Image 1 (spheres, rainbow, N blue to C red):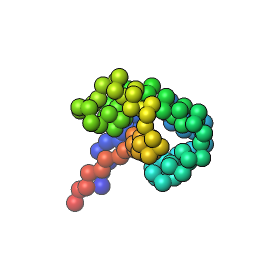
Image 2: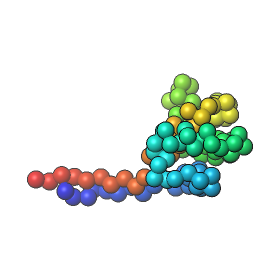
Image 3: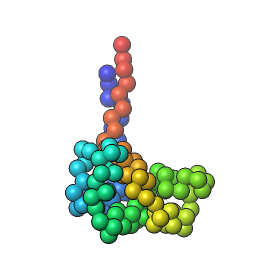
Length: 113
């Protein structure tokens, strides 16, 4: 195998990861929807609102698309703001799972025989 490329985590999501870190999320487990939903249940409404505001500050197209998936390819910012404010814990858990995927370092390998 030969390493072809390596992609570091995306710089634009550090604020969201910092908010999750301050609230006590374990970064090794944020890829698990069950863990995230249980953790969200243990937080109060103000802390969940803090997470939602962090997602609003993100301008990453993958997160916007997930928030406003039924409104075109990448969604509109006004729609995104409304959707984040009314979203439930299940949707927030899904957004955190996507955030975990975006924060990973990706290594691309090429198999040679």
